[in-house]
Each structure stands twice: as structure tokens, then as C-alpha cells.
Length: 407
Image (cartoon, rainbow, N blue to C red; front, side, top):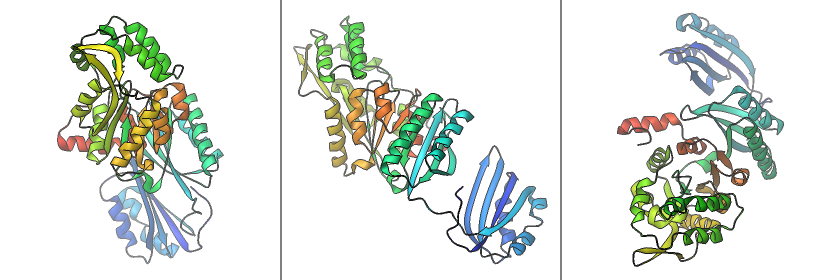
């Protein structure tokens, strides 16, 4: 906790620890009701049925508080301590951040290194809470700092390096109102929302799957111009019957956790969009199935029921993806800081940079290095804690509606 005092009022910090059970909190405040103290702050947490409850009281007579609580431990079966002091809080740092740490498993060494980096940069961990226990363990650190924008960028990069060394993921996002309210979430499709690359599924029907897959991998790493590489790959489809689209659509598999992510964001009133360097012939039906409002992707030219090996219209490349994000945000009357972009390849970099929160999902090293956050586990709903959404809230909402996870 912070040191220092913002005022010199006498205060007493009451701490209650022990086995959690119904009535402990009520018993504490009932005992305090006979004093002249006023409640300034309360914090309670329960971990594996072990209770820690802290109450800060203002303007009390310390002796009166201690006398009022003298028998509470015997009655409630807990340990009670009273610590007189001065003031309420330490000096307030002007910037607040959320640092989210994800691991499967999440080991103490990783938490130690991340919190050490925060301290080394002059920031303070004010509060910690668990966000999820499955499919990965995630915890959120509320952090306050006096750092500049440049300092925050350095903090994010240093945390990302430290997280990588310990095999965990870390995300840094702004605190305060910026995180609340409706948002636009724009997702890449191939290898993000779905497990496959659609161009490779199509090319397999033309007998050129391995050749196209090699080009796709180089393009996603940023080694090839995306538009040129896409045209090269689409040329491999020349003469292929459009009937293969039925088989390709049936072969598409959603990434684990994708339906949970989409369902949860819809419950919160978020708007979702798909922006893909793939093809609208597959992306459009996928968006319709998931109830996603916006979709933008390339179109394949067809003549007499067969692909010509050419595209219709301009290529949806990295610049076009960023334009789509901006256009969707404008259509939804949302500022850019209320947008989230999720992608895995180099062609997602512009929209990740344009969004208020850019997330690299199982991404290439180039993308992980430039995104605000990286998630490297194979579950798309692991993104939810980065948006301040706990797994418990998701599970409660699913249970209330009788929905099975990821169904």
C-alpha cells in the first residue's frame, strides 16, 4: 500500500481474519455501532473460505473501538486487530492502470517479476483480484502511477518482456471510465475467430494447399506484401467450382471460447465486427450465424460457376482493416478509444494500432511486440479479463440462461 497521509485526522484500522462464515461482517459492524466512529473505507476478500476484512474508521477514540471489539473474536471465531493512526489514504497518483496477468499455470515467480517491474517503474499496486480460474488463471492489478505517456509505454514493453520470460501473458489498459460502457470489438477471422485459414481450405480442393500455406505463413509474419501475396494465392483457385464453398464452410471450426466471447459481449451491449483478409463468401455467413453486426472481407470473382483466380474490388489489407474499424466506430457513434481490435497477423497491425485496445491473439512476434496486450493461449474467451469481465460473471450469466460454456 501507499505510504504518506493526505490528512491528519485520527483513524483506526480494524482488521478481521479467520474462517469465513455467515454473520461475521454483521457482528463486526453491530459491535462498532456503539462507538462514535464513522466508516471511511471497507475492503473484504475471501480466498478458499479464509476471510480478510479491513475497516478504516474515522474520528474514533481508539480505546472505545478496542473495547467495543474486545469479545468479537470469541463470538465470531476470528482474529481482530486495531491499529490507530492518522489520515485516510496516501497521496493519490494521477494515472490509474489495469495490469492483467494470465497464465496456465500462473506461477509465483511470474507474479513476483511483474510486480517487481511495476515497483521499479515507481508505480504502486493498489488492489489485486482474480478475474478467471479457467480456461486460464488471470489476475488483475489496479496500479497507480505518476508516469508520463512515455513512461507508460516503457512500462508496457518491459512488462511484456518479463511476461514472455516467464511464459505468461500481460496486458496494460487504462483505468477509470475509459473501460466502462459500450464498445466496438473488431476481430480478425482466420486463425483468430476460426482455427483455419480459409484460403488454405479452398486451395486444398485445388490440390495446392501446401504451396498456399507456405505463402500465407510468410505474409502473416510480414515478410511479403499482403495484397500481392493474396492475389498470388487466389490465382491458385482458378477453375475451381464454387460448389466447394459448401464443404469449406462446413469445415470451418470456431476457436475455443469464441462463442462464449461473442455471447458475453452481446449481453453487455457491445457491437462486434469481423474484418478479414479472407473472403466474404465465408465470413458473411459466419457473421450472420454469430449475430455479428458488421463484416468486411475480400470477394472472389466467379464466372459460370467457377472461380477465375481474381478478386472483385480493392484488397482488404492492413490499411483497409484500420479504415473499416474507423468506419464501424463512426457508424456506431463510438470514439476510437472505445474500440478493441483482436488479430494475429501483420495485416492486423494497423487496426490494432488504431484501436483503443489492441490485442494480439496467438500472434506472430512482430504483432505481439506492437500490440497493447498479447494472449498466447488457445482460448478466445481469455480476452474477457482484459476487458474487466470476470469468469464468475460469465458463468453466472450462462447458468441463468441455461447455456453450456462455449456452446
